[in-house]
Length: 234
Image (cartoon, rainbow, N blue to C red; front, side):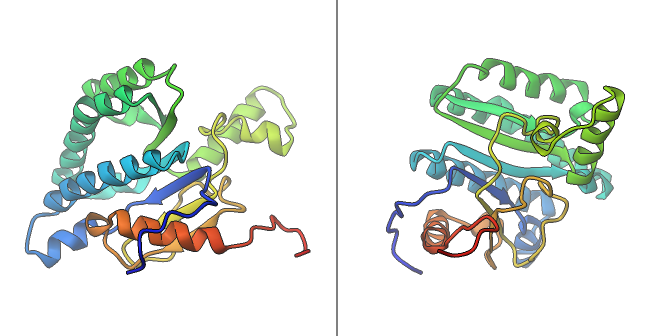
């Protein structure tokens, strides 16, 4: 593992596809929900580390539209974890001045969970020390279709900039860096429109084992990359 040297060229927006909770649990002969709980612990540490580095925007792929196809027991367990996270840990984010935003169709969730999410968003609305953007019941294809339908219903022919304002991330810059853990090398329906010029890093580490050292290693790798956004190298 490389040293924890902090790079100078940090991303403005880093996004995480937090993969590997279930496999982490399976390796230890534990139920999948144990892996998800350990994943939440890792998430708290990584979010804290990112904001401590003054990275202003952090996005997390917490619950995808495809997650609904898992067993009823696992989905209920995920609901419980999400509610616990919002009620217990969001207070910490508020104390640090972190704004909470959510992308996805939260109407799918139970009423008590929807209310908890709404309360966290509302209480943090004026926070200015960073933005934690959480994808809940989110799928990028659904997001794009939602934006298209909004434009059609408004009778609009939109530019790229106007279309971007119809997405969940209307007031959030596109991710500079997208990190996926767990050894898979795909986006899995995450921020397809916003990731057009994102840098990618695919880690073999299962999410519950992902820590600050792994984060720093990735950030140091990112700092060495030359981002040209389609332009010719000078």
